[in-house]
Length: 206
Image: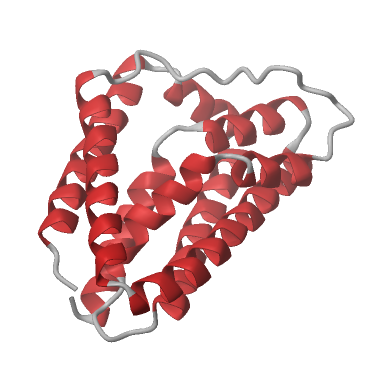
């Protein structure tokens, strides 16, 4: 895959993934509604730092592993393809009927930056997702470490812009995301995306 093709494909995929409602979206909307835009932005920055922490773990481990082991590459490829396929099937066959904006145990005195960061760092699915998703967009012959950080930075930029949009339009966004048809459409669109990437990953060669 050419560099330009990799960046365009990844940017499109990362944008769709950022727009798909999840825990991060719930945290931003809940914080903006109950605590105000400033604290919601702190939570968004924490989420971004959590992404970079996972990116660093994946970049250095992934780069070293793939550079020396054909077996590791093959195992990672099939594990990633299987994981993405499973996620895609789940989203297609069992899309959510609603998006829950309620977060339990909310403390008004919480450090929202820390909460956002730990929400990502303590979520192993984030690491598994990065390991299975990012390698597909690293062009052949390029540094896995450098490209992993670049792709994470793009993901973080898109996520930050989306968070700012949510904070700016808190009431409207939360209302739209509560509509069953919107949640089901987003889940199914993301499911199709995951299945496409699972197939691509399974057929890829080193």
